[in-house]
Amino acid sequence: MVDSPGMIDSPVSQAGIPQGYGSGQSMDRGYDFQGVVRWFSERADVVLLFFDPDKPGTTGETLNVLLHSLSGMDHKLLIVLNKADQFKKIHDFARAYGSLCWNLSKVIPRKDLPRIFTMCLPNKTDGTDGSIGDGLKDLHQTRDDVLLEVMKAPKRRVDNIVTHLNDSVHLLLMHAQVAEDVQKKYSKIVWNNRVQELGSMTAGIGLSVLGFYAQLPMEFTGSAAALTVVGVGGMKWFNDTKLDEAESQLVSMEELSASFQRTHSREISDADEYTASIWQRIRDNLQLSLKSEGLSSYPSASSSEMDDLRRILDEEIPRLRRLASPNHFGSK
Image (tube, rainbow, N blue to C red; front, side):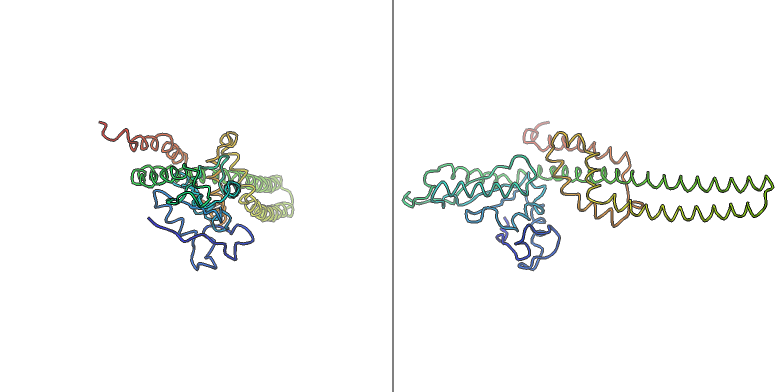
C-alpha cells in the first residue's frame, strides 16, 4: 500500500485549475506530483481518494489530479468522504457532501457521479460527544465495504490489466480515426492544388505547341512558354502558402473537434460518456503530434490495422474477460 502526501493549493494554482498533468513541477513540492500520482495509479489495483470534512474537494491540486492523473481510472477508483462522524449537525454534513459533489462534477465528465463512500474511523465513543456519527450505523458498514474492495485487490489484478488493454485500444483507435479524417481533408486540398497547377501547365504547353505547329512567330511561342513557367511557379507559391494556412487551421482544436464529431457521430448522438472522456484525454496530445510531425509526413494506420483494433475490442477483449471471470476458473 502506498500513501500519497495530502493535497494542497499551490501558489501557481490558486487562481484556478492548473495547466495539467506533465505541465511542469509544482512550486511547493519541487517535483511533478501529478506525474507521480499517474505512475502509481497505473500500477495499482485499487485507488482510494480520501476527502476530509474540512476540505471536500476544494483544493486546486485535488481537482487537477482527478482531471489529469486519474483520468481513465474509473474502474479502480474509490472516492471516500472520510471522518463523517466529525460533523456536529446534519446540516454541516449535507453542505460538505454537496460541495464535494459540485467540485467532482467539474472534473468528472459523466452525467452521473460515481458512488461516494461516506465512512468514518473506528468509533469507540459512548455516544456522548454529540456528533452525527453516533446515529448513522451505515458509516461503519460503508467502511467495511471499502475494506472489502481493498481486500479484493489481488482478484482484480487480471481484470484491471484487461481494462487497461481495452482503454489503450480505444485511445489508439480514436487517435487513428481522427488523424485519418484530418489527413483526408489535407490530401484533398493538396490534390486540388496539384490539379490546378497541372492544368495551367498543360494549357501553357499546349498553347506553345500549337503556336509552333501553326508557324506563328517565335516571339509568341517563347512568350507563351515563359508565361507558363512564371504563371505555374507563381501559382505553386500561392498554393503552398495557402496550404500552410490550411494545415494550421486543420490542426486547430476547433477543426480537430469537428473531425471527432464526424468520426464519432453515432456515439455523440447516443451521449456516450466514455467516448467523450476518451476524446478529452487524447485531443491535446493528438494536436501536439500533428503539429510537430506535419500532416504531409504524419504516419497513418492502414484499413487492415484499423480492422485489427476493432476486432480486439469486439472479440479479443470480451474473450479475455470471460477467461478472467471467476466462473471460468476450474472449468474445462
